[in-house]
Every structure is written in C-alpha cells, then in structure tokens.
Length: 280
Image (tube, rainbow, N blue to C red; front, side, top):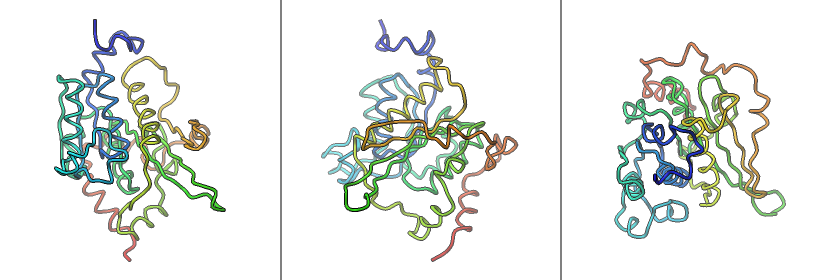
C-alpha cells in the first residue's frame, strides 16, 4: 500500500510522474507557502525554492509553516519551506536559493512547472517572459483587497493564471499593463504592504496546485492551453474569467518564433525594462 493510494484516480503512472517532475516556486510568502505544503502532500518529490527574504512578524497571519520561533530566529523562508517539505516526505529533494529569482535562472530552467508568488507587477512580467523563453508553464497567483464605495466594507478578490505557449500571457489577460508598471515604478518598484489573509491565499493556492496536477497527470483532459480562474472572496465563487473564455487571438507579446530562445538572459530583459520606466 502506498501513502498516495487515495489519489490513484490521477492515473496509473501518476505517482511515478509526480515523483519525477521538478516544480519551481518563486516567492514563498502567503500563497506559495500553501502551494509548497500541498505539493509535498500530493507527492511532488523535486523542488526548487527561491526567495531572498527571512520570515518577519507580519508574515505570521498567512505563512504556512511559520512560527514565533522562526520569527525570533529570523529564519529564511526557503529554509522553513524545506523543513516543512521534508517533514511530510523525507525522501523529497529540495534545492533552495536564498536570493532574487533572477539570480537563480540556471536552477529554474530545469523545472517543468513554475509557480509564482510575487507581489509586484514587474516581477510577474519578467517571470512570465522567462518561462515563455524556456517553454515552461507558469502559474501566477494574485490577490488584492479593495475598499467598496460608500464605506460598505471591502472586496477580496484574486486570480490564478496559467501562462504557457499557445495561451494568452499575463499581458494579454491584463494582469500586467504599462499603466501598472509605471505606477509601480513611481513607487520605486515596491509593492507595498498589500492586504493579505490566509484563507483567500489558501483558495488561490489550491487552484494553483490543481493546475499543476492537471499539467503533470492525465486525470483531467484539458481542452485548451492556459487558464484564468477568478476568485470573489466575498461570495466564495471561482469562475473562469470572461476575458479568457472569449480570447481566441494569438499572443502578440510572445509569438511562437520568440519562445524557446536558449540565449535568453533575464538580466538583460530586466535592464531593458528598467531603462523604459519613467524616473521620478
């Protein structure tokens, strides 16, 4: 008997495939801490974890695996996630990089799926470009809280997007826009203290894990590449975004001839994008 027997419906060779695949997680804050834990439980055995930060007190409201002890010790997030993975599956192979993800490109190139937990628009854009160049499916998570007009509470909303060759990219789907990049640049590239709560992070992370498993195992027949799942935290509804449902054009930002360029260097793209941003 295997510890994964109850998910045998994923396919006859699903356990082997889950054990062989390598998943990269970029940014290990609230959302991707959920993703890390769930992927370990589902049977993923090879991880590349990338995050430059240590845990802080403000992470405790949403960081799965985070504890007061880790806060006092200012433990690196990659170290916390590695310990959590190995506590679930001691046979897992976990490669950690305590640095900016752009400096871990060689490790990320070896991943078959990358899940992003970045909270800034520019980082999302660069990571989407990186994955397109190396033909790696990229799953992006995003969440925000908006104050409703008239002082009637707040709207909690988010989305999970699967960007892969043949599907719309983050720019096509309006996740990345020039206006958002310019505004972020005016704030010196910092995302700021965006509101985050553990339950909505968990919903989005579970959707992301579902997409990872769909990519790896044959349990669910996907009829088209890509995905855009929109979450309304107030109503609890998850739906396929209308803009994705109606999208039928080719991605103009990353045409087929532009993907798979093995000479691509994310640092050059980052420098080019930085030069384009307005200086204030």
